[in-house]
Image (cartoon, rainbow, N blue to C red; front, side, top):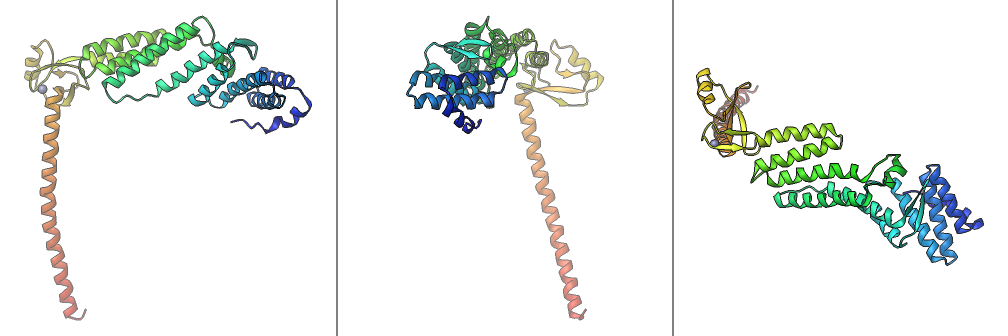
Length: 323
Ligand SMILES: [Zn+2]
């Protein structure tokens, strides 16, 4: 948080409006800390003069400048939203731009929501569905409120030209991915379709790494196979079936090839197992490993006891001989 002590002496000699204008000059010079100090100073001056309306305006400017220190902190954004809402609908100077307090408070409210919703970490299908709904809602609000306009905050603090649609595209992609995750446990094919839609949104947003990542998930979630062990048809690689290393003979591969759904990955000598078979094998292997370890432990303990006895015997013999 910027330090507000620097503006005190200025307040003695200038009017609140003059100090406010100094704050605007600082913003034009991109000195946001300086602007914050001037706005705080103007707030104090207006309060001293009993000018409550101008005090609220200066307070709102200070609250907006405070976010230069904490743009990723939704609490600071929300605090600015409250200060702006208290003004009603007034024109404000933001660098070279003039923006209404209503418009700016809506934009900052959306930016705060974006941070909060992106940080959600769903633990189950219904929480994923809830996150998807909130992302869709936020994407549509960004389109409605700011579609044609350039957002004030990214332009002011980061010199970035961002329109509502550019914000909405990745949010729509994330909404589709959250929907996909909400369905993967019950309906992997539809989950893959949602990731396919997410892929298109990422592509439109020009985020090619995300496009490729989503395409990879489409491939895995839509991958259908037949379990090598039980023969069940299953879709959703990594979730409903997994690959296991195995040595297949040419004859076994040939027999497996006769099936419409191959149950092995020809290039890697791995077979596919549904999660039922996979987890049963894994649990059995674990319990066999534990059993084997206990057997070895018992054998080693016997040997250790024998060794300890031998050492003790040698020791007592040496003592009896006075060595
Ligand atoms: Zn199986």
